[in-house]
Figure 1 (cartoon, rainbow, N blue to C red):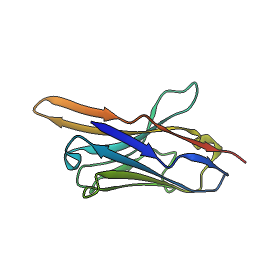
Figure 2: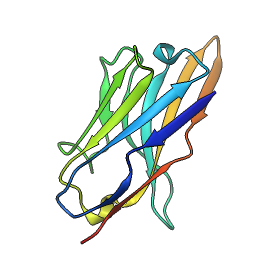
Figure 3: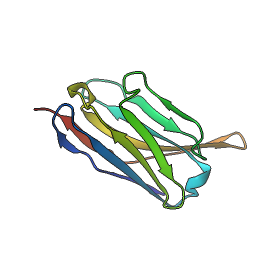
Length: 119
């Protein structure tokens, strides 16, 4: 099982980035996908989540209207399009896969990709 994030980097305030999460080793279409982030000295926070079919999406208030989560079940990938980036969006962004079935939780994490918003 592997989740591999990519697309992070350094961007100026107001800029955009698109993060990708490539999944292998499990049935991607069964899992809800989420993006979390963690800044130095802060707890990991949920940024956005999308259900297995892509029909239910939720965002943290801090990113609503600026970030868009999406997925492609045919490619086993999830994405986070980030626009109007702010310095406070600086963090390591993690991809998460979650499925609850038969009273068991199946959860996987990626290694993270760093996003730095700075002029």
